[in-house]
Image 1 (cartoon, one colour):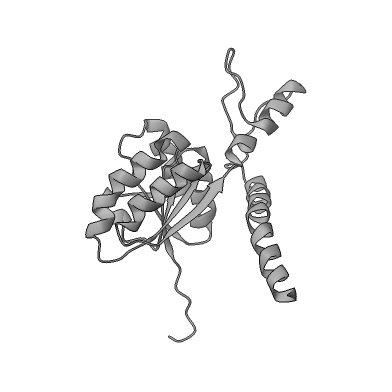
Image 2 (cartoon, helix red, strand yellow):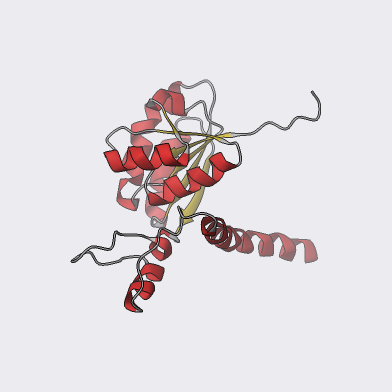
Length: 193
């Protein structure tokens, strides 16, 4: 009883290529991953199923320990506003993690919306979506992801870097190193002083 570790639950909105990739890695490590399919396409629902994410209604998202907002940056404020009534009414307050690469003024707008709900807020923009972005290899469809643009330019086929196992682990590790390096240097610098 005393030696068991509790596994956190995570809600990810939405199950696009980035959200589903992160969701898949979490479910592989026995983390319960919830998601909302409200307004999403069948392709999103398929990605969520394949990643092992559990679709729930918005009110059930508040039962998670962490709520990750991984949507197109232009939808980030609208998502926070959509979830605000649910989060305000919830007894349990998940940490709301804004993972979108939004401008500082937009991040502050989102923080204000979430602060009013009583949930803790973390701003953690993901810029790697623009490096790993995947579009199917079809005539007239231009790649927007940096790595896939390079691969296609060299005559290869685009890859789904965040979905294809086992390579997705390596690509997510690169992102985590990028995210944590600045924080680690700040802590180390403070420790030296």
